[in-house]
Length: 301
Image (cartoon, rainbow, N blue to C red):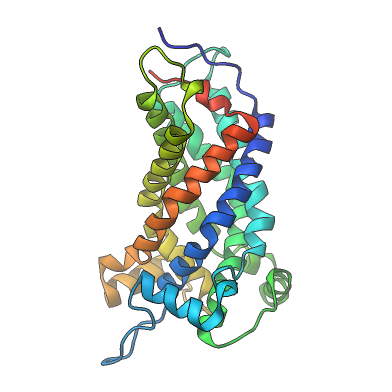
């Protein structure tokens, strides 16, 4: 018989998510910088090689030209924004589960977990969109040879001065398009993996550290398999000069497909996948070990 779930606490999920978010930023930011630079590099002129030939070339050039600090450019914005973002993400997931339970001991199906995860993606957008905008601009400015922003706060001030709150929140729709389905996939996959990794006769809450790491890491890969095409569009749109894409993501999509083909929607794929497993594994491990993941008890039908 399946273990009955414990009552879900959105408040505890809120603090646990914040702790997990800090862990993810420190582990994943260098490869996130590589990803954004690959996604936003300009198309080379005919007969000229691209700025970066791939993930490892970008990593080498960044490390050689800027040192380790270059890999962590723009990290202040995620540290400030991703911490509450992850807290709100897990809070939204806990709330999404609770809204679908008629009574506290209801066991949710996988589609219900997917829906709860999608709600968490909606919750995070208000924090995620401006943080992503600032982070991406800071990550690429060294590669362009222009130092317009001295840091995250200066970037936010300039964006607001130039275009108001809309300038700060540029790319919100694309952030939603990325995070809503990707969050649903992440949480559903994580719950599914925990269930299949639990030995017969054992409780999900008794999973070993290696199994938690594996479930969290693999769920991160599933998350990014869904997220990367809208993420490419978002990075290009958020770092483009004002007025370049008047029709939003549709203009970005048309330009990419016309000039570089469908494969351009997967720019940065290698960096994303290398980053996804360790970053999400560490995030989930610290979530559970630091505060105890109530979702662990929510076995599915």
